[in-house]
Length: 141
Image (cartoon, rainbow, N blue to C red; front, side):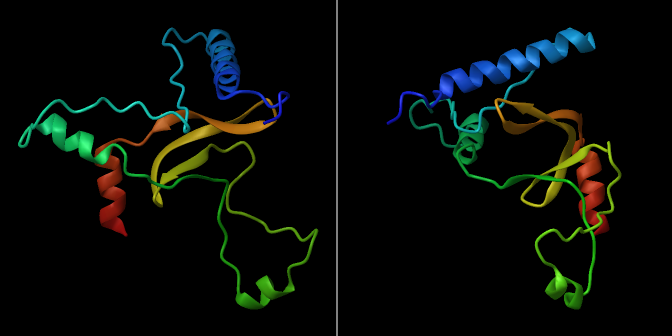
């Protein structure tokens, strides 16, 4: 193990500091919500609590899901894909400066802005899709 590699704690501290600076400049009073994908803090169940709604939700908290951030999309014919080479440019449907889509298992749950801390990309959520909006989008597809 190398001593020059930053620890998970120092990386989390850097993200927290960056988010604090950002919230202090934007004038928000709520503290930032920092999500650390490497940390799992699931409360332990107590005893046999079958039928308890809290126990039911705790059963699914450890299920992994695919979280992705989408820059944009486009549709192209296969012949175009076969012509792609290093340096090719693919035009996307998103405009510069538009919020990025945050998807969980392919479903839109939020939008946000890209941030960089210690040469790593992250996303600051700017808009959360409400459950009713999510249901409307699912029923349309």
